[in-house]
Length: 269
Length: 172
Image (cartoon, rainbow over all chains, first blue to last red; front, top):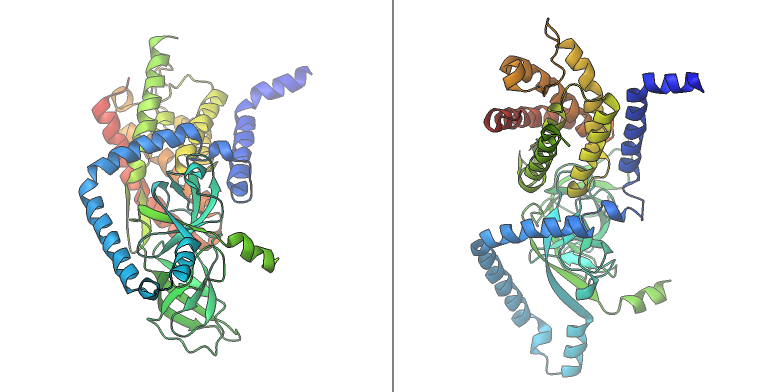
């Protein structure tokens, strides 16, 4: 016992170093597949409040730019609405069901990281406003990510620029489907996988959401193809995609609540 | 609680708030990569008085790191690198020890040991901290060049900020 105590007092520094370092590495490794790390999240209430205060101040100082942005968003949405074929139809029944399929919840990003392998955004609204896990997040320019966690006041989003993000997309006008995966660390680029080598695609082709999942409706802008490579012996292209949305700047976002999600998942089960 | 302890606690709040409220918002880079991350919180560990027990220093480093992690949404990342830095501090201090030895009661700053001494002391430890941080962040040898670039660029700018803080606010 005395020897043990002597040993501990002599080597206490290296012991505590080893213990705490192991703990840190454990936390880093388990960050992605753990469900009970709530107290470390920025959606955690106290940290969330502090972040929100800072965000409010920053918001106030940026009001001019924000007004411009909102005007642009409104113009874009009006333009889309007036040009849409549903607007011109006289059949109010169809019109209603199409409008009420998707509910759009406006919100803002109050905390975000774009420089890590596993980036995260935090939204400043939560389940009280109707935001829930699995809903898609878009900005006026294109898609942003998917809600992964939500409590009463905040929601945590996995953006496109996270290594675990997977999004089903299609090449506009050509109909090939692929999956969008991100590789660190460039937040303006991502990669497209599972496009077979017989596909007739060229650089400059536009990618839109496929509408296969219940997260995003069909036809939202994602990005453009910048580079196409074919590995020898592979059946699939390696494709680089440049994102249309600048995720470093995006601030005002909309959450999409798809009303028929439950019904769709039920038949697909 | 003597005045020294209270000063250290005050300094803790100032440094951590500067880090998470101001420096966190600044990301400088080009072509979609962010090479420059500004870190000031290692300074808190650098300035802890020399007589502090080693296990206490490492524990304080862990707690500081976890608090920064909460704001950055990166559990364990800052904590791990700061614990590593706190562990290495003893060896760097031994290496840089002046002939007459240390006056154990002081904090190591520009005003107690001179600018040259503080520059070497802080740059070695901050570089180790950043290298550990970016390596753990990448967690793979695939990104070695990016890790090195990020470490070097972040190191230069963080070191400038740390020296400025010490020179302007003059912590005793």
